[in-house]
Image 1 (tube, rainbow, N blue to C red):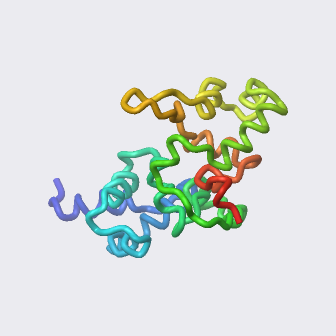
Image 2: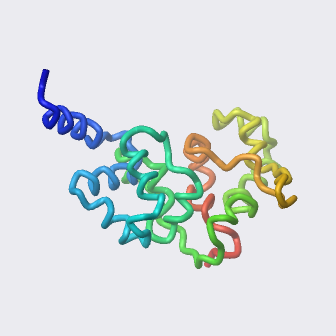
Image 3: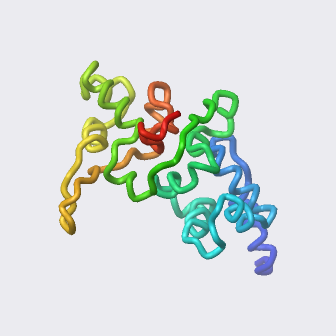
Length: 190
């Protein structure tokens, strides 16, 4: 059996190895972690070293999370283009340009306010029908419908989305809906 230090180093190298199918942002986080500057990188994005987002990034890098939640991507949207979470490293050449916007809303609004992505999705559903879009893009039709439907929150009666678009959902529709639009509200577009 090998000593604990070499075992830790081997596991660390394996976790931080760069993979072409990693999202671009995952590679950025892995590079920052491997260089031991992940905390500084988060601080450069405007988060304190005590912010919960650092723990989320560490869990994401180490494979405990399949993706970063919409709320956390939203919190990073001013410093990191949301599309970087949805395009893989081997797709960097087709990464769309960032959408210019003026932030006017906080992360709590992502749960109950229509993003530009929702607006475009509703237009597509009106034009082609939900079942047709689900079939064409390989999305479960119930996930598609739950992404646009709202329900009342029990605590305060405020309406909120049944589901936010998942990593796979955004990737499936990225050719017709720019991934940045899921994190930008129509009122914020320039």
